Length: 80
Image (cartoon, rainbow, N blue to C red; front, side):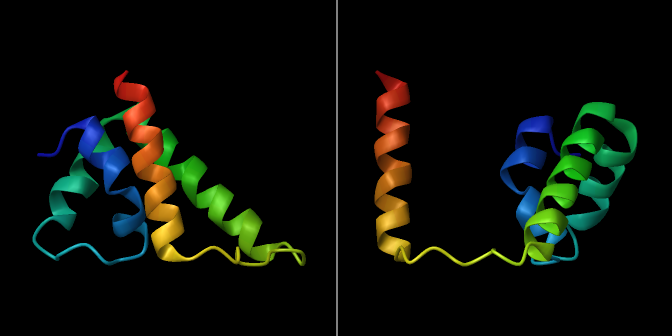
């Protein structure tokens, strides 16, 4: 069964149904048991629903490469 950290890291895959079928039961079971992860998933669902219903929701004009560079920069700054 996955740990809480795995649930957080792969929550978008789980919610978007992009997770391999053989991993989904373990995630479902963990979420059913763990109140903290269940709250996290529910908050993420609510956030996604709210943003998708917003008339002003416009995708950012940032490339995937730029986003990846920002994420890497943030990872490096937290290691220091």
